[in-house]
Image (cartoon, rainbow, N blue to C red; front, side, top):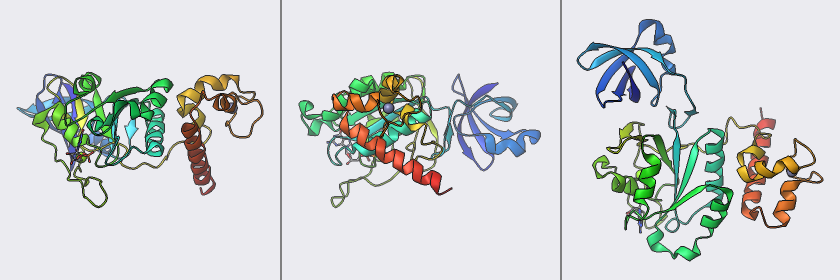
Length: 290
Ligand SMILES: Nc1nc2c(ncn2[C@@H]2O[C@H](COP(=O)(O)OP(=O)(O)O)[C@@H](O)[C@H]2O)c(=O)[nH]1
Ligand SMILES: [Mg+2]
Ligand SMILES: [Zn+2]
């Protein structure tokens, strides 16, 4: 039999089969040493030992792995920012996009709390749409964007990520009220919500697909990324860098750099380029400290 690990606690794996039955599984003896290699999100093959128990025999190859929360085979990452309370932070958005790109995830950017701002005031929408990212304007309050987000979640393993207080839990409850996720109260001091989500578990959508109940990328260090990879994690840079004089161009001080030329023509966004330099510095400093 086969299914997906939706929860892992103390050597037990809760596995959901494609026909939505749950089995509590242990790892086969021989496999136990490798049991550290079984994660939430893994597709596993198991032998049924009891009505709702089994033994994992084999794990399918993983497509990717997030470190925090520990979850594998994520396909869609819903990047959730509110436009107000708290306001959008483009440096953090670019950091999450770099992490998503480096993990081969398909990012969808939700700009939430659209009910609090005017649509024509949303600068971020144009910047990121022109790069090619999917943007959905949402409101957990009015329900705007719920249908569009559902289409992105259908039949996929997804994580929601983004700052605390941006409305992730409220919105997910709107997508599927039965999830009953805890909603954090915004503290009037910081205008940020409290962190209310913890252990990772995949929750099923009744329209198909699953979502991690704790936010992805909760550790936002750019670990495991090499500084010379970074130019390829900004897709709009990668597309035109074929025209840079040097194939290893870091788009910094090199002559005949197509990226810098595009920046001067206004075809590359200033804040994206600025954040690129911030991350480049960060990665080089990490590399020097090894
Ligand atoms: N005006 C408005 N408030 C929202 C919206 N979505 C969430 N909120 C509020 O923002 C606060 C934080 O929401 P929560 O779902 O806990 O955010 P999370 O930390 O990202 O999970 C709560 O007080 C929600 O009621 C929205 O679309 N519009
Ligand atoms: Mg939450
Ligand atoms: Zn260049």
